Length: 139
Image (cartoon, rainbow, N blue to C red; front, side, top):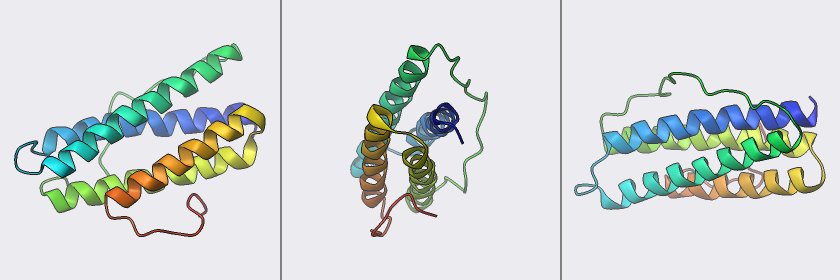
């Protein structure tokens, strides 16, 4: 995998995360589950920032960034707060694996950014109940 391919793959994961966190936020209640809603809102904002950073990195290389899909299926049901948290954990695990690959296939500033994104996604996962691991992002 080339560095550009790794960045494109990370961008595709961020597109999916932005979409799906929007969906999860719409399924949660700010009044009934304020902590969960705040975590979802923060995750949405952080994934948007990561997505925008990846778009900028690719644009600096004169590479057209991979486009977002028109729709993404949630990786599980989203009817209860527990189900919403489970989907959020799955999203963060998937993004962590993608950033693990990005770290392995990039260097310099791109690798540093990927390490930071991997760290951020691992911490977000903990907030949704993901158990800690020694090496997040490794399959």
